[in-house]
Length: 164
Image (cartoon, rainbow, N blue to C red; front, side):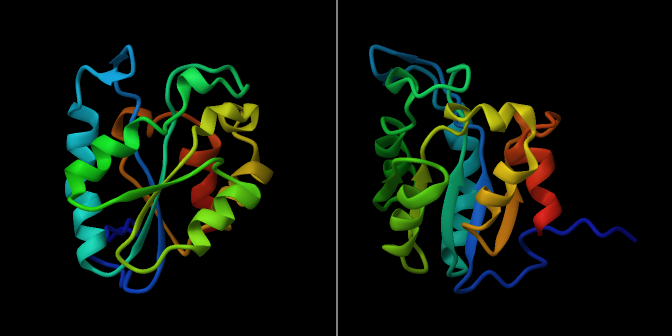
């Protein structure tokens, strides 16, 4: 018997669910050239939406080296996500702090919010526990749906799980 739980084991109705996704999709001139990573996370997102969760997506994009670089913003991915889930996806201009809190506070069960690039913060790749705690404060439940990054000891993958 394992302590490992899936989204089928947790009642997420009315809860804020942080979903670590891998949305690091290839882009050229602002256009997604391969949406496979988005498509692979859609079943999880749709399941959580159907169960009445507020879905808060955490992801990275590119290698901004811990600095804000708007060429690596996740904002352009909102349109593709909205199309894929069949409803608007709102955007939080940061993954922690006031901008994340405002985006989440404006949501209701069934909504989807994409927060800004985790790697704009050097604490993400450093596996910083304080940063992981800040991320965790935004949700009631954590789901790691980022297979391609699950092996990394980053704040949003390995460290955040300590808070749930």
